[in-house]
Image 1 (cartoon, helix red, strand yellow):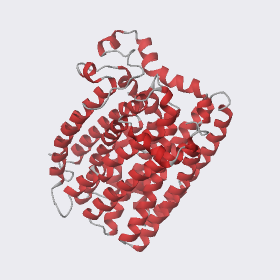
Image 2 (cartoon, rainbow, N blue to C red):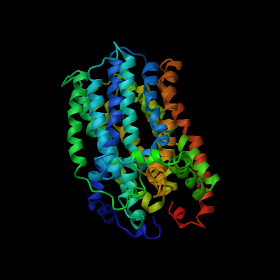
Image 3 (cartoon, rainbow, N blue to C red):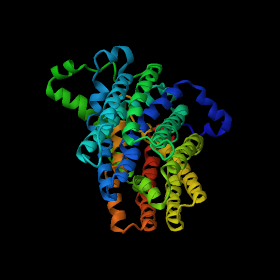
Amino acid sequence: MNKSSSPNLSFSDSLAQLRDTRFMAIFLFGFCSGFPWVLHGSVLTLWMQQSGLSRSMIGYVGAIATVYAINWTWAPLVDKLKIPYLHERLGQRRSWIMLGQFLLAVIVLALSFADPRANLPLVSVLALGIALVSATLDISIDAYRITIFRPEEMNSKMPYAAAMSTVGWFAGYGFIGGAIALALGGETIGLSWSDVYRVVAVFYFVIMGLVLLTPVPEDEAGVSASHGLADAVSLPITNRLYGFVLEPFMEFFRRCGFKLAFSILLFLIVFRLGEAMLGRMSLVFYVELGFTTDQISFYQKFFGGLMTAGFSLLGAVINTRYGVIKGLFVAGVAMAAANLLFALLAVIGPNVGLFMVTLIVDNFFQAFATVAAISFISYFTSRTHTGTQYAMMSSISNFGKTTLAAGSGAIVDFLDGEWAIFFVLTTLMVIPGLCLLVWVGRLLKTYSGSDDSYARL
């Protein structure tokens, strides 16, 4: 992103770039990435709560999302291995995405025949399966978003690609997929949660048909050097270890330098921890506060997700004009401040007007931060090892969002349900991330002298 030219574009000219049809594929795959979080998160959370499980247990079951924080360990295989039959017809990235949709449909259907009250271990294993497939799916989705554009297009396209991916993600998690799933099990329609999962399983076959309509990237980095499973096994073990596993990570540290690389990874761990803690317990909070499932479906999923989608596009324009580092800093401060509105809501009670204001403010800065974070990670990703390096950085970012946030329910229980205090604590959690961001910004000023790509941030 060349900041010297970006400010000359008007807002309408900036949004005109979205006429590129490749952004529709990015939107679809963003949806595919966000929707599974409804299935092992939102819907399952309400199902478990209505089955009588405690806040702590709901939080601990949420730890299955830890797989998103470790998908970098198998990302080299997704980057390199060809899927028989599908690869020849769909290409490297889309073949893995198609396989993921099919596996999700099967697991979701199996989950529809389980019951958290009667067999929580089975439900947890199936939910883990959804998260595992989804985390694998994300590797190819993130690589597709980067490789669908030519290298010379990255500066102008990447913030908008991040925005469309965010819009798609929240369409899946929020205002389309999430809202519909919760509405199906809400008070008005009244399907059982088992039936909701069965409807979703059928919907996945529609998604598979849409995947067939998406374009193949012109430059799928690493595809020409990919191996089938038999070829990979035939390679000497030292070649497999270095080429598949070590080289993508070593290249990242060589290119960035150890100090900058380590600072980036540490920043990604802590930056959105407070938001993750809040997000994990938000549905439990809304129910305990007195909101109905229908209200949560409309206000939190549909209305909130729609706001996030719109704000994502605005975030792309702002980050393109003023730089990602500044955008991340402003978003971090604002997200922390927005958490205080949840504390106010906890004190006042189920006030719909305050609920809407809280969601507007929270979703605006969530969208702003998400677009900036995706762009930030994308700039440091090599096109040679796209899926693996992006998975490494996003996994580390997800570690705070999933693994560390799994204790959020225990914290609320420890506070004896004092939600206002809990939200104040999530506000304070942003401070370490902001300090690290300032440090990374200073390092980038040093590195930008030798690499113009860092000056874009």
